[in-house]
Each structure stands twice: as C-alpha cells, then as structure tokens.
Image 1 (cartoon, one colour):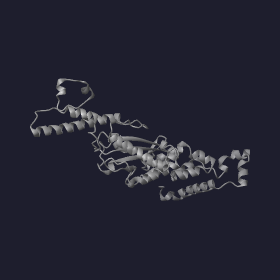
Image 2: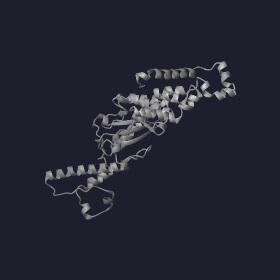
Image 3: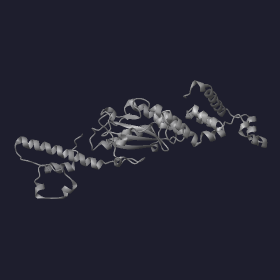
Image 4: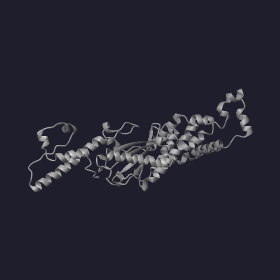
Length: 343
C-alpha cells in the first residue's frame, strides 16, 4: 500500500469498509435478516435505488478500494460479501485496472493479468522464487538426475501453490551444461524433466498438470551463465490461462527461431543427429590415434580420414577397400559408442 500522509485517513476509511465486508461475509444471516432479504421490495424502495442501502458500494468506491489494497486475496473475500460487490470486483475490467496499477509500480509480471487469480498466483510465485536460486532446480553436474537438496523447497512450494489453484499448470524446461556430450545432452535433459515430474507427483501434483521441454544444451551453449553446478538445471514455470510466471530469462531468445519449440509443445529430440555427430567424432579420434601409432612405427605414409556416412557405405570401390582403418570404421558403425566405452 503506497500513499501519502494526506491520504492516510481516506485509505483507512476505505480499508475499514473492506474489513466490515469480510466480517459480514463470514457471518450467517439471522432469521429476521433472511426474511427481509427475501421480502419483495416496495416500489418506493426500488425507486430509491442503491443509495438507500449502506451495504452497496458505488463502482468508484469499489475501484478506490482496489487501488488502495491490491491484495487479490482480500479483494476476492470482499467480492464474496455481497452480490453487487461480487459483480464489480470479479469483472475483468477491475482486474485489468489492478494489473495496470501494479505494473506502474514496477511489478513487471503483472502485465496482461486479467483475473484476480492470476494476480494471486503472481504474488505467490514472486515470494516462492525470491531466493537466490530463483525458479531453478539444480542437478549434480556431469549427468546427475536427482534434484539437489538446496532447491527441493521449490518443489514443495510449487505443490502447495498447485493445490490452492486447481487450474494451474506446471512446466519444466530442462538443461544440461555446455560441456555435455552432444549425443546424450537432449536425453539427459529429458530424464531430468521426467524426474522433476515424478517428484511433483509424489507430493500431490497430478502428472497431467505437468509438461516439459528438454532443451539439452541448445540454451546453455549460448547463454553467459557460468559453466558450473548451476548449469545442470531445470527451470520451473507456473502457467494459468495465457499467463506464465515467473518471466522467462532473455537467454531463451538467443536460440534461433527455427530451433525453438512451439508453445506448449515438447521439443522433438534430435538424438539420431546427435548420435551421428558422436559417431563421427569417435571415428575421427580413433583414426587419428591409429595414424599416430603408424607414424611412430614408421610403417606408413600419408593417410586421409573420411567420415562414414550412409551414402559412402553403399558405394564400393577399389580405393575404399584399401582405405586405412576400414575395419575400425566398420566396427564403429556396429558399435558407435566404442564397444561399451562410457563418456
């Protein structure tokens, strides 16, 4: 609540209306009040309109209440106090005014919020992700799949928020460090996202309310984040209707548009392409090692390495049959990971 001292009395009066309305919303009507509420109104009472009832607030007064207290939970309780208040406070224009006021105060995530529930979730996520780890879930660097203890409170907090808001969805963007081997980066990120979903399911969040995007190292190869334990992570986002909390970091925009996943869809894994790249990398390393041994023994002249491809394997020629390392290359095609070698 931000106001000058000159407006303190006015705001205090407005807030007293809020407290009165909340208290009356919790108190059941007496028999006399219920009979009066059901009694048909006289023509003179209808002509007098809402001005005759001290329990009806004008739209300007209601809007002033919203401006004075942008607490969406308190405003929802106020809206439940009376039918006319409910119609005014739960109107979309009322929520849009509150989001505009919050944005003007520097609350960037409030932009485009159209319901009080969206504002309430925004405040909860802001509090939940206000620590140094933000909305990050860290994993052991080097391919670990267990969420580290330092970020587990985020999982428990997310489960509590999801229980309070049944229409809320949780989305996980999983990453590996830039140093992850190309052939397993996407698969590792996918397994990390699946582990987060499993952890959430164990504490009460239904699996169908969760989605994931395994980025591999598409983002980590471009961002300016340190290449340490914090690079092996998943980022948790809260989605309701068209809003997502918290706001995404700018480094997601560094990925070229054609490589970005479509909204609300999982990115398709390019494991086949990555495996082919890993196969060629391993072949190159083994061929170079063989050539060094040959040079050291003084047995060979010059040799040229040609990566194995599908097209080259179909072609047959005398020169190819005499190519150095042909047996090694054929073995690598049968076992692209080097006969069980672990990276």
